Every structure is written in structure tokens, then in C-alpha cells.
Amino acid sequence: MSDSPLFHAGAGPPDSPLFHAGAGPLEGRLWSALKEINDPEMPVNLVDLGLIYGLTVDGGRVCVRLTFTAMGCPATEMLMSDVRERLLAEPGIDDVRLDVVWDPPWTSARLTADGREALRAWGLSV
Amino acid sequence: MEPANSATLDALLKRGELVESTSEMTPGYLRELKHTLLVSGDTELISAPAYYLAARKAPSVNAFMTGIAIIQDELAHAHIAYHILEELGESQEALIFKRDPKAFRYPYAFDVPLESWTELVVANAMYDQAGFCLLGDIHEHGSYGPWKRGLVKVMAEENFHLRNGRNWSKRISQAGGEAREELQRAVDWMFPLTVEWFGLPDNLKQHSTQLDYRLKGLTNDQLRQQWLSTVVPFMDSIGIRVPAHQEGDGYVLDYPFPCTFDADEKRWDFKDPCSWDAVLKRWRARGPRNAEMVALFQESFAKFQVRA
Image (tube, rainbow over all chains, first blue to last red; front, side, top):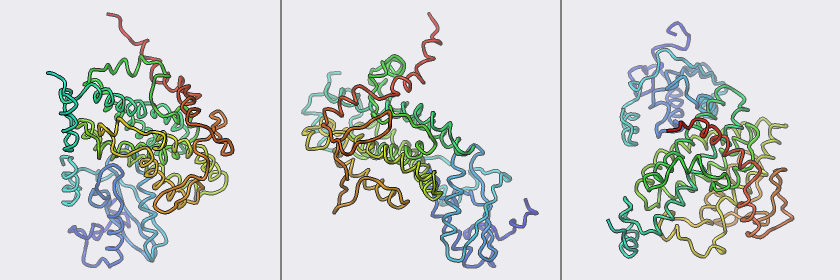
């Protein structure tokens, strides 16, 4: 996917090394918005769970690269509709494109420190 | 070990402590605990075939996966209740596979078939919300430790079912047209059925052994109000009519409660109020699909029994 126009170094969440200094305040706001969406069964949000691989903004259009914890995840449509709806609620965003990717596959190594802590506090060993 | 006497048990319950073993229970507590577990296990178990018949109508592969995942959760939740019953001396096998369909203790609502994806998601939004209120109460206030701890994961998983119900209800309502009318029709028959799920109103139920033993913490009317306070605003927010409205701190039903229900037609007659005796009679007779729903998981059991 590295040849995809969506893949670039600035694709990581604001607290990750991938989030480059050139990313504007809008990107930060969109990452924060995605942090409001929780996994349907665990008290952890999609960003801290490590499902969001990156996002880019072009005018009013945001493209999100995301994955799921398993190909058999029963919540893919639910989460995609939540992501779309939440981002469309942000001022200046009128188009949301979702790019579901399976490579690299999700593993628990993609959890952020906060995500790991949230799951541990909930009783899940990660 | 001698069974606990009621003074010791009462003192333990008053201190807000948990009952952890049968040695701390009186025969009355054990009986009521088993009954409460049976209602819970039966409700979760029967939701599996009931939801399955509707999940087959899923509009996409992932929606079908969602339906199947919810069914898997419900079976696991049933297993928790039956497993505890087994530890308390009951036979899971006898409870699940050898009981007469009419002896199951799940709410009447599950005897009325869910026949479409729309009816399934309304069940997720309303029936699972009822389950969430009832189990949430047991999780928060219940006095039996092993069950209370088992419910931690159950609550998280029920949340997934609710979210499926709400997301799809909203989506169907926004689609408008016939899809929205079908959603309204489903809510029209399923809403009053869930309202009655919580049982006799408090003014007719003077005394609750379950409350005495802290097997639950809230009364029927308190739980019904809790359910109304989530479902009514949600349905209002997606533009679907429900026969209830807010008045002060509580919610008031806009129809005589209880009233008569034609299960075959899935239709309530708000012009024909009835007594609670009539409702209890309808519940005891069970609904149109009771035998069929129970047969869905019982029918193969005898066939595969290997004789010793």
C-alpha cells in the first residue's frame, strides 16, 4: 500500500512518531474525533486500539486508512458508519473515504500506551 | 456444613456483603437465586433461535456476521447462568434439553416471531435494552458474588447488541419510505411487549422476595422507567413514534397498561384494556412460537444420545 496516495509519513496519530510537524490543526481535530468512537465491546477507542492506520485531508475530503482486529470482526459496518458519521460532523468535512486495509495486519502491538492501560484496567491481559 | 440461618444471612445482606457459597444461603435464598438465574438463562438461550430466524434475513455479509456474533454472545450468556445453576446442584442437560417448552421462564416476547432484519434490530434496540437494565441491576446490586462477577463481560457484550440495534434503526429510519414504515410497524408491536416484560406494576406487587434477598436492587417500575428513559428519547431522536412521553422526572404510557394483544397479527388493541390476570394467563399459555423456538435447540439432543 506504500504506493497508495493515502500512504505518507504524516499518517500516524498526533502522539505517535508518524505524526509529522506539517500536519495541520484540522488533522489533529479529526484524530481527536476518532478517539471518541469506542470499540463496541471493550472500553477502548479506535485510535488507542490501533485500528486507524492514517488519515489525510484534501479540501473537505478526509481519507481514513483503517483495519479491524480480525477479518471476522462482526462490527466492521458499524464502526465504518460511526467513523463516517463522526467525521462528517466536523466543520469543513463534507466527504469521508474509508480504505480498509489488512496489510500490515492488526496485532496487539498496535495498541497505544493508553489503549494498553485501558484494557489492562478492564482485566484484559495485553 | 449446616445451612446458614436467616439472621446470619440477613446480617450479611444488610452489611452489603456478597454471598459466595451455598453454606451462606438459607433454603429460601437458594430457591430464589435459582429462579432468578433460570429466568436469565432461559431468556438468553431462547434469544438465540429467535434472533437466528431473523438474522437469516441480513442485508449484507457483515450484517449477517453481526447477527451471528450477537447470537454467539447470547448463548455464552445463557451458559454463564446455567453453569452457575449446575454448581448449585441443577442439571444443565435436564434444564436445557429435557424441559417441556412451556416450562421455560423467558419473557413472552420471544414467543412472537422476529421475521425480518428490521424486527431483529428493533429487538436489539429494545429487548437487549431490557436485558441491559435487568442484568445491569443484578450486576450493580446483586448479592451473589459468582454471578455478579460473571456479568462484567456480559454487560460489555450487550452494549454491542444495543449499538447494532440503534445504528440500524437510525439507518432504516433515515432511508425513509417503506423501510421506515416497516420499522415503525415493528416498534408499534414490540414496544408495549417490552414494557410488559418488566412485570407487574409496583402497586400490585406489594412484596418482592428478590429485593429482600438483594438478588436485584430496583423494583419493576423503577426498571421499567429506566428502560423508558433510554428507549423513548432514542426513538424520538430518529423520528419513530412510541406510545409514551416524558412528564416531570418520569415517563408516562399513552395507552392503557395492560391491554390486549393479538400475537398472530402482532397487534395491540389500545381500546381494549385488560387485567393483569389476563396478561398472566396469556404468559402462562405461552405464545405462538414457544414449542418451535425450544425445538430448535432441543430436537437433535435425543438423536445423538449414545446408550451406555
